[in-house]
Length: 230
Image 1 (cartoon, rainbow, N blue to C red):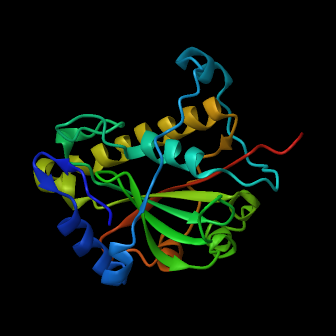
Image 2: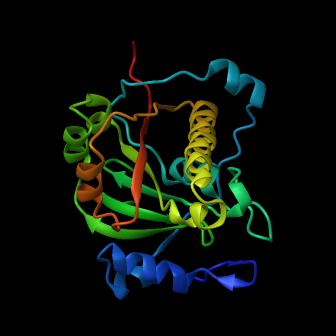
């Protein structure tokens, strides 16, 4: 059975359970969370990744590995300290971002949708079945969505930050999603993968496809995969 890591002395499971109930997940699904392997260490320097980073919209038919997906998710929101701080900075450590992933071709994972639990570094299955074609339609027909092995969906519960900073907190959430997206870009580059930050989509359709809780707003879709030969 999965053992959840502690952050600031609080086990993540109760909060995760409440969140997943809002997503329509059953208790059995919560208990079947999939531990992720340790993120890959590529040895590529940060200078090289900044130099080589590009937005990639064309992907090959290749699959990506669970280790690669693990590294991408960790870069987006992984816990990097015993006190619960994460890989991307957050105003007041309020952490409004929630990372979902729609999977089509990832080794060792069934096609379906998953929620990333940063404290456990694990994936919680939400629904089976390839949803990428539906996400493509929600994203105004952008083919990069359905051709990728997986799509990272960054969503936010704005109340986590606005409850501390008021209306100004909305700006902080938008800033934060940029931090997380750049981490995903650089990690994909270091692994020889590609991604692109997609902001053109119908919020309500993306929320319907992923069955997001009512308070969650999708902010970015980021397909990830091996770049196709140009």
